[in-house]
Image (cartoon, rainbow, N blue to C red; front, top):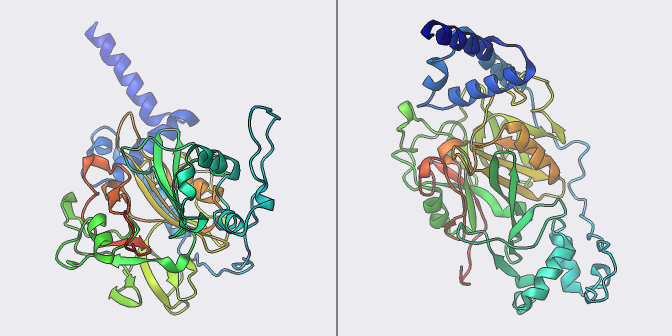
Length: 408
């Protein structure tokens, strides 16, 4: 009996490790990629799976990175000055018991400017929400402030035209915060309308140790912040003080570009997001480095090859992504992960799809893992991996705007 069990186990093991059945191969490769993309849990792959199998899988990732080395955002054939259309009033079945809502096309100037600014916001769901919460308009459209993005909040009935739940509307700072979710993951997407408000903030203790994203946001009195650069992290116990790669904040260079395969990711003085561009080609006002690029000049560059895992070699992880739409809108995405029953994480391919859904023409992956976090008005609104409050200490963060004297 014991021999039979051993034989069955061996056959199952060989089937899982060596099978070329697409479904088995896909999830085996994602498992390997996910384990090998961590510092402390590589053993989850290396203990069970032969080195040759692991090497073949990771070679796909290296091929993707090598293929991206010539990528460079040029903004050619992309009209950056196009203005989003005011969303049309959405058709609904006649309902005599439901009062008519004002037609956005016949709205007041304040309403029209609001819906023109927040073109992602579904007008009908917003107007329904205002019916239930009329106090929202007490200070006019230009001062609308709705914040149901906190971890303790239950959300709202508002939706984007893409169908996602709207958690926060901050008209004064030109910010929408949206809940995004898919198979196995949950995250937040911040939609920032003024790219000039987006910059890189640096830890006050850079060079010694990092700070939490909240501490960096507090230092700059920022409205919103996400993590950005990677950092030296030997044995997974780094303190976030030694940034890896180019670091420019508000025109001041704190660290030189690293050699190797990392891509420059930053804003030029024209407030456009450039990926892969050299400092000779773009005068960066704010920049970091990381990989991979997801979208460059409107082309999805991370889903071009039909690799065996469909994750382009990067596995399932907590993710942080930055992007920009044609009209200048900046998209800041964080996906929670490594939390069974809540959010495992996602692939860079899925992140690219989310960014495409919201019109990104440039997008790039930033540092992820336990560093991934989004902070809004001084509060953590995502759940970092490993239960770390406000994520790990990091050298810098992407920050947005400046809080005024209003109540947070």
